[in-house]
Each structure stands twice: as structure tokens, then as C-alpha cells.
Image 1 (tube, rainbow over the protein chains, first blue to last red):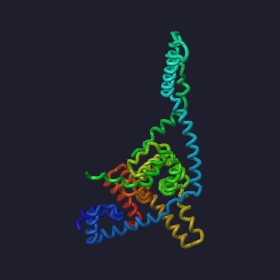
Image 2: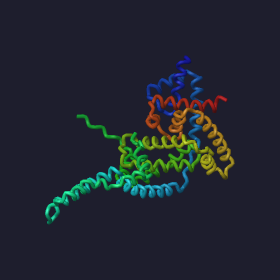
Image 3: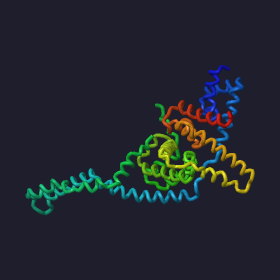
Image 4: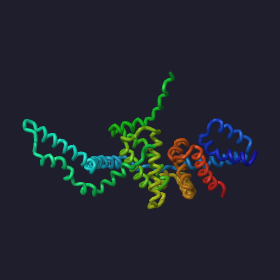
Amino acid sequence: MSFESCEKIRREIVAYIDDQLDPDLRAEVEVHLAGCQACRLRLDELEKTVARVDDLPLAIPAPDLLQRFEERLEHERKGIIGEFLIWLLRPRMLLGASLAACLLVVLFLVVRPGGAPVSDASELAIAGHMDLFSDYEAIENLDVLEDLEFIESIDVDT
Amino acid sequence: MAEKKAQPLDPDAELMLRVGAGDEAAFIELFKRHAPALVGFADRFFHNRAIAEELVQEIFIKLYRARRSYRRRSKFTTWLYTIATRTCLNELRRGVHRHDRKSLDEALFADTRQAAAAADRALEGHELATRVDGVLAGLPEKQRVAFILVRFGGRSYPEASQILGVTPAALKSLVFRSTDALRRELYEE
């Protein structure tokens, strides 16, 4: 057996042990192993290595892990309701809400049920600039906005 | 006309879609199914069960927050272990945790208090675990993570390659190099 062929086969031995080779390559490995004692020795060592690692015990979770997680999940649910309200109060949302409110006020003033249409220009001017009365600064400084950006930045679609 | 091939059912993916539709019980079921194995997986990074349990809860909270955007583009466990691997690596890179082997001691000695023979096995297991950890600590990160995913996470090669974002050939090479490094430690002294 040539050094090159042994090196090539040895790189496949762990995948062979793990049964992760396609049938053709698996057959090629088996043919080589049948005629190469050195590679069979390497196979033996790697099989023992894998077996010893597979026998190592994994950590066992504490019995109350589920209960602790359910409590944390409940806390998360309550937090999401609060975050939804904060999301609703974002500046863009406030602007949208303000414009919608403007429109409603204008419609109400122009088409007042049971009354004469509004003709007071000053009332219309006030209705058209309701957004200037929104206070963005207080909202922009809330720390919770950072948490929302973090949530939105989680890349979970793989 | 050829019939469209039906997509194989992934029970976990079906559960996650139900979570996205508001089924909280389905989410608890997913936790029960996968949290124990994930604790074992995360523990291989930190050797501290408390930290592993904390991270597993954090991983599932991330899943919960992303529940409405889950689209079943990949197998559920691929998605889960991708998030788990990234979470563990991010935490590892913070570099604040000490490896103290608490969880290994708990696992090894939980069943061996009465039997001397079992205690010998436990000691051998402890020594082996120490040697395994020593070898893994000296490997490049991708080799170490590939080894943990396949050997301790139970992921297949195709799934591990998706999780790590490498080609199947690259994943095979990573697993070979890490396993062979351990072989040299155990059999070439």
C-alpha cells in the first residue's frame, strides 16, 4: 500500500466509524483496510478513542430545571406585554397615531354630526399641526428601546 | 404529471409551528424533549452544570421570542443547535467562567457511592474526561465545536455542517482532525 493511499484512507476512517461515508467510498475504505495492517491498527485506535469518548457521561439536569424554566417563561410573557406597549409608543408609531388623530379631528370638525360645517380657520390650523405637540424626547431616552433592538437583531432563520 | 414529493414530517418542527400559533403547551413539550440533551451539550463547553442550565434556559427564551418567525427552512434540531452553539460560543468568548468539573463529578458519582468497582470506573472516567478536555482546549475553535457537536451533541455530519456553516467535506475533516488529536493523546505516549 502506498503512503499516499494510506493517508487518504486514514482521513476517512473516523467518518467510516461514524457510518457517514457514501457507499462507494465506504467500499474503497474496506478494500484498503483488508490489505493494510497499519491502517487496521489506526482503525482500531480510532474506534477505541470514539468508544471511550462516547462512554463519558453527560451532565444530568437538576430535577427542578423545568419548574425554573416555566417561572422564567412566565416572567418573559409579562415582559413581552410591557415591551409591546413600549413598541406602540415608539416615535414612528406616535407620529402615525398623531396623523391619524389629526385626520379624525379634521373629519369631525368638517363633518360634525347634526351641526354646521366648521369654518374657523384657526381650528383647522391647530388640527393640522397636532404632531408638534407630541413629546418624542421622553420616549427616545427609554433604555428598553435597546432591548427591542437586540430582540430584532437575533438572527434565527438558518 | 409527476406528483410533488411530500416533505418528511419533523415532529419537532410541527410543535414549533404550533408554538408560533400560540400553543404554549407545545413549547413546554419541546423543552422537555430537548433541554436534557442540551444541558449535556452546553456542559461540554463549561464543565459547570449550573452555567449549562442557565444557558439552556436562555436558548429556549430566544426560541420563544422568535416563535412567530420560525419557518421550518431546516430541521428543528438544526435550528436549535445552531442557536445553542452560537450562544455557548458567545458566552465562552466572554471568558468569565472557570472550568471546575462540577457537573462531571455529579454525573460520575451519582450512581457510584456504594460500589468500589464503580468508583474505579468513575475515577478512570474523570481522568479520561480531563485528558479529553485538555486536548479539546488546545484545538482550533471549529475543530473543538465540530467534535462536541458530533460526539456529545449527537448531530449527524450533514446537520453539523449546516450548524457550523461549513461544507460536508470540511466538517468531515474537522471531525477527523479533532478525533485523531485525541487518539494521539491516548495511544501515542
